[in-house]
Image (cartoon, rainbow, N blue to C red; front, side, top):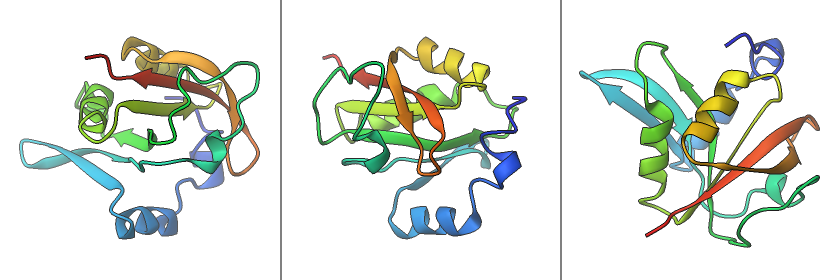
Length: 138
C-alpha cells in the first residue's frame, strides 16, 4: 500500500514473531478456494502497547478485548478485514486495532469496518500508531 515505514523498511514481521504467534495459537489464516489469501494475529487479553493511549481514550475499559495485529492479504481477495472482525467477535465483544499514520489504505478500511478512532498508541519499537476500537452491538 505504499507504506514501507511500517513493515518492509524494518523487516517486520520477523519470522520468529510469526512463529511465536503460531505457538500461542494466535495466528490465523484466511482461505478462499483452498488457497491462503490472508493472515492475521488475534490475541485476546490486555496488550501492553495499548495500556497507554494519548490524545484520546478507549471507548470501553474492557480488559478482555481482542487485538488485530499483522493482518496481510495476497491483494487478490477483498473483505479480509471484515472477515477478521467477524471471527474476532466470535471470541470477544471488543476489538482493537492500530495502524501507521502513513497507511491510508488501512485507515480507510478500519473506518469502513465500523471502528472508532480513539487516539495514539506506541508500538513496541516506540513508533506512534493510530488506534481504533469497536464493540460488538447486539
